[in-house]
Length: 162
Image (cartoon, rainbow, N blue to C red; front, side, top):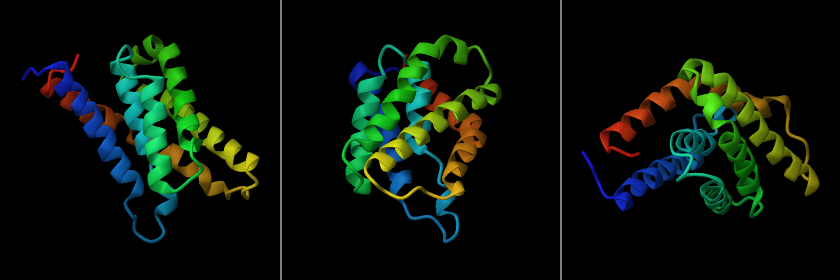
């Protein structure tokens, strides 16, 4: 199924929109601290597979959307997403050489960078340091990566996004 480049970008936007919804949807009691970094995972996938089309500006825009919907400091998510996506662009060929299960370790490091930057901005604005459980979503994201990869890879193939 081939589509115009505009429609292809629409699929990327749609998946980022789904990631945004998953980011703000309430989770069952006691599991809120395990929420995966959906936006970061989605951006990492699209940047790995379409490095000439999805990159830092997409990450910045998606981060601003997360900032607005979660009512956080404007630019906080934007910064914390843009830097790991920059790293993905620099390391894209190396990361893509591995199968999804092994890519998960690289994704884990990228998710750690995202959380570290978010924590840095929180500290710079005088917010309290979160508990140790703050780092758990990075592990959840690492474990989910192979399935996120397979799901988005299927969408990319279905809509012939190149």
